[in-house]
Length: 257
Ligand code: PEP
Image (cartoon, rainbow, N blue to C red; front, side, top):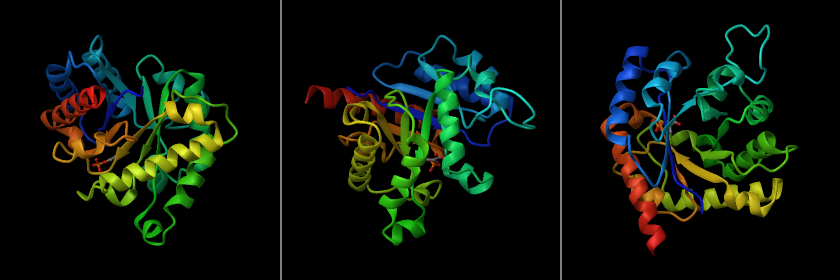
């Protein structure tokens, strides 16, 4: 059975001191959470400090990105080798990386492989823009992104995929849960085509895009959705913890049904 994952993407927010405060507040409410996997993804400069706050708790630490080489003349880059001991997860292919830093399928694919070599679980983000959605190109875009990132590699059920329609990120306009469930089902089908059906069945696929404590239940109650990638709402510890608690109890209810 796939276990729910709630990952908080803090983006380019928080000084190191603020990140420690936020992580400490998360530790206070989630220090003994059960029934759900949880991760927070601070900036690179705060990784070490946040790791120390959350060490020995069920809350993991993730990076928001990574480069694909281990070391060398890559000014400004952070390698998987550098974050290996600190991070259980690393987000790759986020639409903001694609938009502002020119990342594409090829670089994302290399990042996935690099993380795999270092035992760090990628959270691979895919999703269509508003224009692509309105033009009926959602499926085409997802196939291209998934094939680009995963094609040519051997099956790996540890990877996490996050379906994040770009128009829902940071807009307060979350997608409809039943539509997300259908799209996530298509993503799973596509992974089954690229790799195989058994691997696709085991892979966790999250939804991301304006998730809050108000709407999270509608997503995690869906059969295909295995958790959420939370941006803005993860910057408030009380809100993030509510999202986590609802995800944990929703999964338990599902298991009893
Ligand atoms: C994100 O950055 O991945 C995200 C989903 O952001 P938000 O929750 O703010 O829409």
